Amino acid sequence: MGPGTGWQRHERTNAMKDPGARGPGDGTREGNPAKQWSISGWKAKISSVRFRVVAAMLAMMAAGLCVAGVITFAVQFQEADARVDQALLDKAQAVIKLAETANAADPESFLKELQDAAEDIEPRGNEVMATITGGKVSWTLDGASDEKLLPKDMYQGAAALANASGAAYGDLSFEGRRLRTVVLPVPAATDAKQAYFLIGRETADQREHTISSVHTYTLVGAGTLLGAAALGSLVAGRLLNPLRRLREASQVVSHEDLTQRVEVKDGSDDVTLLAKTFNTMLERLDEGAKQQEQFLDDAGHELRTPLTILRGHLELISVHDPEDVATTRDVLLEEVDRMQRLVDDLLLLANASHPDFIRKESIRIPEFIQQVLEKVHVLADRTWTIDETADCTVEADPQRLTQALAQLAANAVRYTGSSSTIALGSRVDLAQESDEVAAPESNTLVLWVRDTGSGIAVEDQQRIFERFGRAAHGRGDKGSGLGLAIVSAIAQAHGGAATVHSTVGQGSSFIIKIPLQTADARL
Image (cartoon, rainbow, N blue to C red; front, side, top):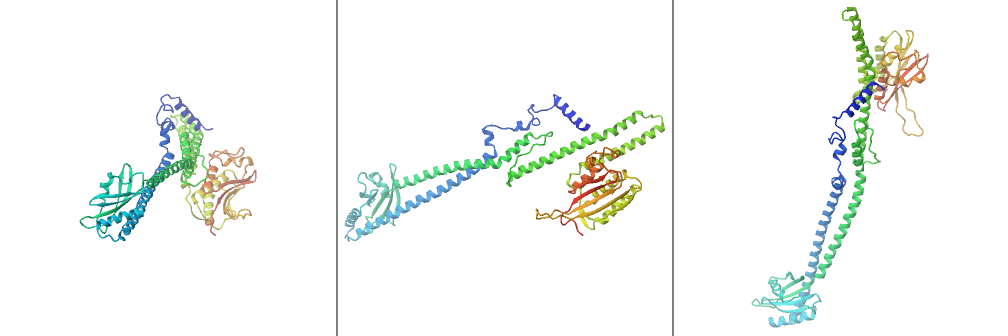
């Protein structure tokens, strides 16, 4: 492990030992956000999203049930009164018509015939008939034998309903009883002594039935709300469960531990997608933190040696010896250049995962390979050649691919002699049809740099693509150890990979494979 990690842990340890540093127990928001913002008991339940969603749903349902009930029962009451009014009007007209058939000669005899007709038709047990003359009730006829439906205390109210222009409808109430009445003017009466026929019906039973329906509706509505509350709470709890897990994961996530994830089940609702997005964010943060830690470890590991060299030469320099000063200056400049190259390589690797690391454009592969060869053949006196080239156009980043091939060429120069051959090449491997999969895999662009140098042992072929990875024998004694890691990062940024085929004593072939979309490769 590099010194960069040790420095970080040393700083964290000092911070933990510092009594003035803020920690989880100091009651500050920075110390423990989970404890700072935690709410328990009924207050937490009332303030939860689950409670608010269910409460809003129940409020809307209750409002809907109340409006529907009020409208429904108001219509029922009106229809019931209309049915009673029509029945009373028909019966009153029948009584008057029966009295008119007697051919009474004067109003007094007509009123007598009217009373006889009322007795003949006979009111029901909850009905009452009466006549009003001179603003007073002259006689009443009750269908009930045990009590009067129209007591004297209601006479004044009954007389007030009389209307000479036509039938008048109204309600008479006494001691909690309600009498629905219809009052008709008597046709045979004179203007001087106007008479009216009254018929009324007690509607208490009917109203009690309707009110009983209201009570039943209320109980059913209350039961419906309770059932909806239970079901809504269950459904809302399941839908919002990812939010609870997200909150719990957020409470334990810190800059030192980004490994927490929200457990998410399969689903496509908004809350589930939010939890998945949160996990993706944590993965990016975790990856970024690992890259940062890797960068610090690499920088601390590799910069320590040149810094030590610089310090040693500066401590031993003889300022009065011009030759020593000049020699030391050359050594220091060489180390500074090496540090600059190292920093540039580390920054490149750190940015390799950024979306804008590569910028694709159309590349004609034959011209591209020829241009790369013209740039790298000046690196050393070798036999430079092109094995083959694919005659196609692809979408890729020409600068990054040139950088990768140039790095492979420089690596080949480092481990070959003047009589060796270094070759570049490219081809497109066509997708292979599969019996099990209907759609074939994508085509692959293959780029390579081949040399006839010392080769690489099998056990070292994977390690050399790691940062600062070097072969155990015969290679890796020069350079920073980041060149092949950069090549691998460029290949991965294009969605591909970098590999090597090598045999000790016979040379190596470093290969970059980049998968192509259907429209990427054009002949």
